[in-house]
Image (cartoon, rainbow, N blue to C red; front, side, top):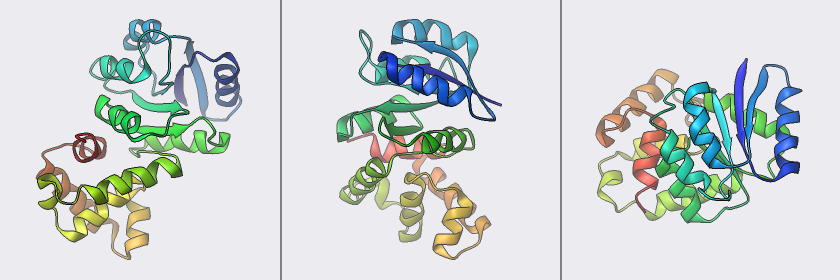
Amino acid sequence: MIIVAIVEDIKDIREGLKLLIDNSDGFACSEVYVNAEDAVKALPESQPDVVLMDINLPGINGIEAVRQLKDKCQSTQFIMSTVYEDDENIFESLKAGASGYLLKKTAPSRILDAITEVVNGGSPMSTQIARKVIASFQRKDSIDEVDILTPKEKEILKALSKGLRYKEIAGEMNIGMETVRSHARKIYEKLQVQSRTEALNKVFGSR
C-alpha cells in the first residue's frame, strides 16, 4: 500500500485527487492539507510515502514547503502538482528536493503511475516538463559539471531525466541493464551525488 498525502488549496482538485487515490487498489490517502504551514508541521510526524504538493498555495508556497520538509521527511518523495510549466518553477522545485513534476491536467491514470514510479526510484514528469528539462540539458552542455561526462553518460542522464527506469533505458539503447547501472554509478561518482534526483538537481537546478 502506497500512502499519499495531498497539499492543495483548491477544493475540487483536492477532493478529486483524494477520491482517485482512495478508490485505486494499492493506494491510500492518509491526509489532506489546504496550506503548506499545516503540512510542514504534520508531515514530519506522519512520514507518508509520497506527497502531492501544489506550488501556488496561500502563505508559504509549495516549493518552499518541500525545501523545509526534505530533510525532515527523508523517506518521503515529493511530486509537484501544478499548472505552472515555466522553467523557473520546474528547476526551483528540483533544487528544493522534488522528485517529480506533474501538470494538473495530467490524466488520472498517469498520476497513479507517477506515484508508483517515484516510490520505485523514478523521477516522473509530464511530457511537456520532460521536454523542458531535456532542452535545458542541451543548453547546458558547456557547463563543467556536464562536460566531465562521456557522450554515453550524457545520453543516459538524458534518459534518467525523462524518469525512465534502468530496464527501459537498456531497451531504448540496446544495452544490458547492468551496463546502464554501471554508467549511472559513474555519473553519480563524477557529479559527486548519491541518486538520480540529486544528479538532476545538480545538473538542472543550478540555472
